Image 1 (cartoon, rainbow, N blue to C red):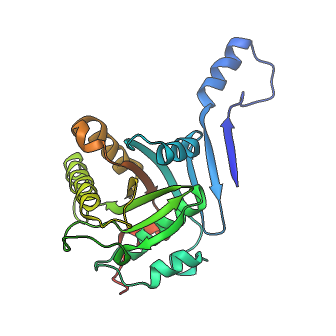
Image 2: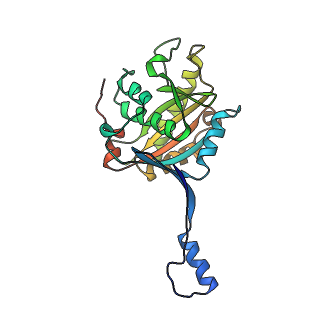
Image 3: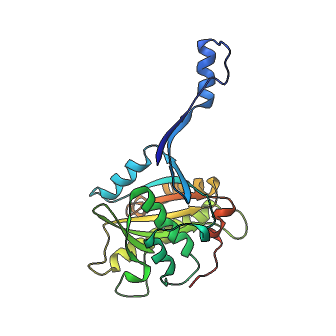
Length: 245
């Protein structure tokens, strides 16, 4: 379910002048947005997000853009009703670490919003030489194969800074480029997405600033960066997960 939401109003029923009405409307108008709702979560994003996302993934030119959304889970992860492909990701051994939840929910988000279909899980994509950078999964969006790397913009001690954001983007965007270069024929993707989970709108704004103002253009040219703000207790396992494999 996608709804366009526009907010505006005069804040009361009394007769007011045209100028006062315009001023009050200007105070309360919010940018139009889409809200996708399913049984597990709501996803709020700019009104043109859906079309921009599909256009970016399907056009022949390299994907190079940044988009942001807000993720609001309705239930804890272990109570969510996941798709079969998400369950497959959840139950398939990965390359190690404690990022299963963030990767599974990344796929569920793209499946729910862009009708993405899982292609290969992390360990099913092959590379030569082995031991280098890899993607977390590949999926298909209509006729396009997409390689997705999932990361989290967070900090265990202290405040997350713009320097942290720059280091994260440099590492992950560089890794996507190396993974694409080393991936074997038949497992390759035509578009890349760096999915960044952010703990707050402040952190998301730092990642945006780092991307647009502090990274060289050539580093931005090889992937679409999707920032998803996920806050609150139900979203906490995305960032503080114990290893499940």
